[in-house]
Amino acid sequence: MSEIVELNVGGVHYTTTFETLLQEKSSLLHELFSSKNGLVKDSKGRYFLDRDGVLFRYILDFLRDKQLNLPEGFREKQRLQKEAEYYKLSGILDCIRGERESRPPGCITIGYRGSFQFGKDGLADVKFRKLSRILVCGRVAQCREVFGDTLNESRDPDHGGPDRYTSRFFLKHCFIEQAFDMLHEQGFRLAGSCGSGTAGSAAEPKPGVDAEENRWNHYNEFVFIRD
Image (cartoon, rainbow, N blue to C red):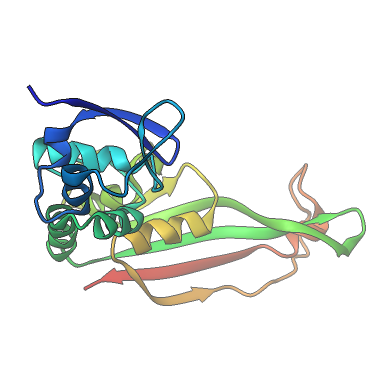
């Protein structure tokens, strides 16, 4: 039976075996734990690695199962790739690169209606950008792939399967940069955008809507593609 080993990776503690750590002979882990030269221990006697402790769980899982199983909507593949490069784990790198190469091409459009929220002093006291909702249009399967559980499908009942297209999805949050980050992480790039200019309205705003804020309503769309 392989000897049990306690690890402290960036403050996160793990229990595994030397057999698991030595799985990939060309890796830095094999180099470190086969000789134990250059290793240090913390105050509890655990071997200490000054790396990302949270992401190390996926590295351990891969060494145990020879499969890279990431949760749906996982958003740190670039950081995980850097960790795999540091540990010289070619198996994980092959999985990440292979996944990217197998991604089908497609197009997703992001739209939002927004305004600028003002304080009592009007234009001199702009507080922040205000978005009411971020809309998502595209092929259903790709929208789910990119946005995972942040995607709200309640307005678009599932008819026709994942190969259908929709213009009725929206996100559960209102952070446009978060949506852009998720698209970028899945290999999409911005291809074009358009937006309305600001426009005043002579109509009386709805109850509870600030008249000055209402003057600055605008709508923008961004088209992302993956080749």
